[in-house]
Amino acid sequence: MRIHSDSFEHRGAIPSEFAMGAPDGFGGNRNPHLAWDDVPDGTKSFALLCIDTDAPTDASLAGKEGVEIPVDHPRGDFVHWVVANLPVDAREIAAGSCSDGVTVRGKGPCRGEGARQGLNDYTGWFAGDADMGGDYFGYDGPYPPPNDLRVHRYFFRLFALDVEAIDLPAKFTAVDVFRAMHGHVLGEAAIFGTYALHPSHGA
Image (cartoon, rainbow, N blue to C red):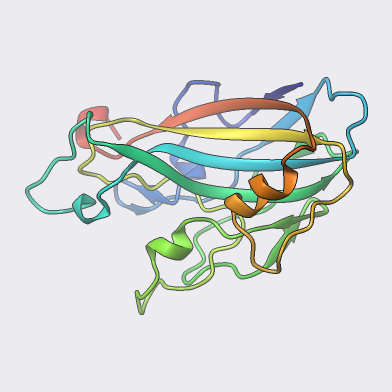
């Protein structure tokens, strides 16, 4: 199985059109275009995840005045998009079809391209914030700390499954998807793009 995007090149920079954060504030926050082919025999549905694998593990350092987060700071995952039960005949997601702009306090439960979209990690990040707190369903793009010296990588992982639908709660996360699709994955394809807001990277 192969996956590609017309919105960015594999291993290349993601334009701010598809990011939540930009040097001067919010970015366009549109979901990027994705398309795939060479689907394994027996596929009955797809699941899609977008994960930043370079998120700082000490969130208190993000944006902290007078501090730069070093490249070798311990890193963890930050989930930007969770899609489950994409129908078997789906081969493409159009740019901007699932997200087009920043929705303060989250988009709420949403469907797109015939599928269900789960909670991304901005739900936890903004929890308790009176202005931004809420349930962030669907796609919300890159917003790495502007004081982070590392260029972040955003992996778009597509899974071909041997079931038409996986059983998920009303509010589900990437962890729920991984658990539900265990033993049902026929194949995976992935690409990644990069994004950074630190001035040294020319953002």
